[in-house]
Image 1 (cartoon, rainbow, N blue to C red):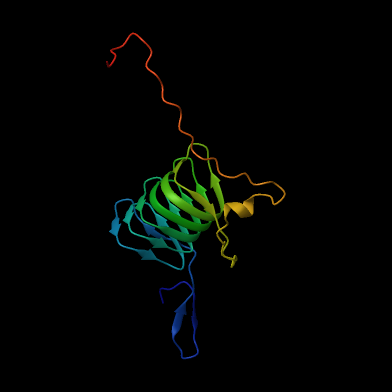
Image 2: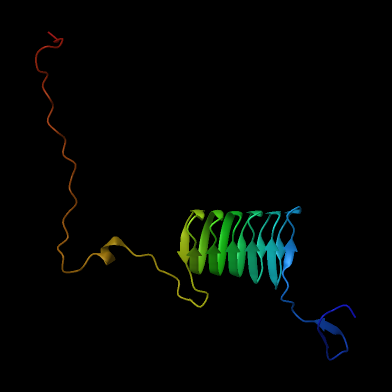
Amino acid sequence: MFSRASSKGAEGTTAVQKSSVPSIISADLRITGNLESDGDIQIDGTVDGDIRSGRITVSETAVVKGALEAETVRIAGKVTGQIKARQVTLLKSAKVVADVMQESIAVEPGASFEGNCRHYSRDATVTPTPRKVEALVAPTMPRKPPVEAVKPPPVAAVGGGPQAN
């Protein structure tokens, strides 16, 4: 009766279709705990916890302390934690202290970002193998033996100071 769109399942139960309207955490709301949604989440208030969603929007008034994981993350407010998303956009009013793992990132002039940025692909299945320095040196270059530490000769005292007799 009140749902916008629904379809009857095989057993006659009603399944609500996914809405394009985001779940909104209003500016006067403070949440302590994790949030998870298949749809979109817009944060206008304060969240102390991790957020996982299809799309996350952090508005100018929002403060988030926790990890964000989504297909798309747009930040205009303050975020402290970790961000993992296919697309990350830091708007000019963003203040982010986080490690970011992303496929693409856009940073508007004026945005504040402190942390590490690492590109990743969800399709990648190859795990990087540790490489030794020897593998990075071209085989045609002769390898020099390590230089041994040489002690400098003792310095003799030169006049003018107290002398031991």
